[in-house]
Length: 424
Image 1 (cartoon, rainbow, N blue to C red):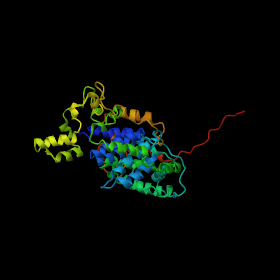
Image 2 (cartoon, rainbow, N blue to C red):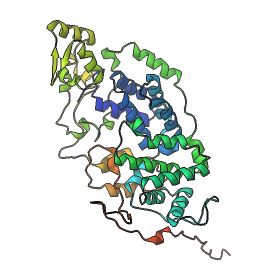
Image 3 (cartoon, rainbow, N blue to C red):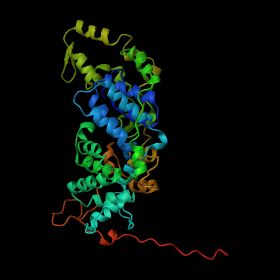
Image 4 (cartoon, helix red, strand yellow):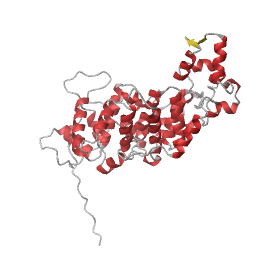
């Protein structure tokens, strides 16, 4: 695994950034974010921040996405904007995290019944499916709304959502739609799985009540004096061993890092003991090496003098191989899996997605049951398994059975009061 500017494994720095941002540790969040920036992982850092928002904050904190979209989508970026986005994530209170997206994607084939409650602007001749969808949005029944959205083509979903939000939220969601439909500028790539996930985020955003929506747009604070002072202090020791201030949290490793997919008999300390191969793959180190040599399968130094000059410049203290065991343990150590243990989505979900799902109440146990015995490759998008849908007049897609749903599901439930027994 390539090493960062100060010799942390890069995959673990990304994991630590996500972990600290959701634990409201503002200084540590800035530390890991700056370490990635110093390492040349600019686009990758933005991608990590975006996914941290997506899975742990989501529609209940649309202000983060709005600000990130206005500052981080450009090809030319300022490091202060990235640091501020990281700070914004970490200042959202731990108690206000929301895991609705994760739970609803895991339960994509399930839905609730809606009631006749309908927005006043809906016309009487509306299509039955569209009426069900809009009622689900209006009533905050996100599971039902997402279930119906999966029955439609993408264009129809976005068209109905944009029309609904224009009425419901006075069209103030337009920048959010822009960000979600062009998410590759933040995530760094597009995929069919994330196309679906962004549609789900859009659906959840339209399930917010007006009060929830206003809270989600609340402005997030600027960097505090404490944060600015910390950044200044850290700048004075860039390139030195004392810049390795924080230790990689073991709790962030499971499933999403190389060490988090290895047993306790495995150790990655060898990356520090034989440093040169692990410099390859880090943009900062590759650019630094280019002045003194070239990279093929390994580093080829121009001369012994260039080799010595490189080490004098970039290792002002001592080389990692000479560090003490405690100094190495700041960034490296043993794998986290037990004997014969394998990585599962069940365990990751159980330990990571523990907060509220305000748009899918009391679904955590259902989600865990759904994830039992499922392996995992470390990809967040693996949570989404499309439900079986019915698309008339379109040839069947392999492995996705075209099963017509019961049209009675579209009929609203008419709730009635149950007669009370005589109180006298």
